[in-house]
Amino acid sequence: MERMPEPEVMNEVEQVCAYASADFEQENQGFVNSFMTYFPEFSEGHIMDLGCGPADIPIRLARALPACRITGIDASQPMIDLGNRAVNAAGLAARITLRCERLQSLHLSEPADAGISNSVLHHLINPLRFWYALKQSVKPGGCVLVMDLIRPDSPEAAQAIVDRYAANEPPILRRDFYHSLLAAFTEDEVAAQLAEMNFSRLLIDVPDDRHWMVGGRVY
Ligand SMILES: C[S@@+](CC[C@H](N)C(=O)[O-])C[C@H]1O[C@@H](n2cnc3c(N)ncnc32)[C@H](O)[C@@H]1O
Image (cartoon, rainbow, N blue to C red; front, top):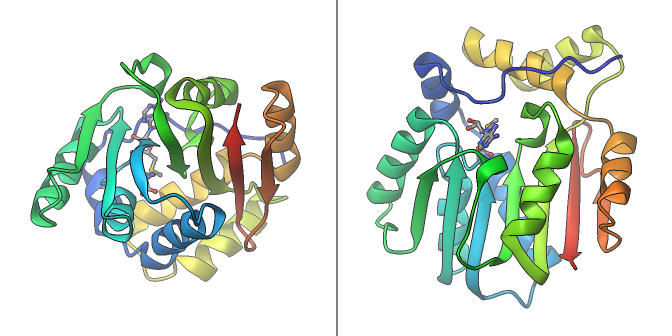
């Protein structure tokens, strides 16, 4: 099936509220656990989250790594507003900073020690802009963990995944999940993007039936 891109930034208030209220515990805590497994020696420093959404992953990561600072960026102001509310409620405002900006125009005074991103690449028309921003955000030798959806073979297969994993979610979330699957990249496409960026130390894995994960160090 050909890729069908979806709108880049999640700006609709109803869409943002549905996303922020959904239960992504398994996926998001799984992502944090994977970070700890990939980088068991990483215990302090600055982590960048590209496309942080409502900041659930930064909050989980900050709790797991009490000596780390995290900066999350997202181009959606409603997402950043909800994220800031969650960060304040968690009492983590001293260690988590959220900024509303597009990753394509990101400028950091100093690159971070690690870069993470979940479920963002499929939003971009040009995926190389994402990998370029990641490279700019992380210092040489820094840790990288990126996860996103895999595009299924057909619209019917995408609908079956939505029905299996989001049966009880609100219609707007099911709609977005379906369109995200159609906009996602295949494992082979992601591998080609990594090769084009010369990310020879980043390896791609398929941890379950609907995600790919890229981890390793950038040089
Ligand atoms: C599906 S959400 C994922 C949010 C979060 N990473 C998570 O796992 O919960 C994708 C997020 O990427 C953001 N996004 C999309 N394109 C972006 C861009 N070019 N720059 C910054 N953020 C972007 C959207 O606004 C949205 O909040």
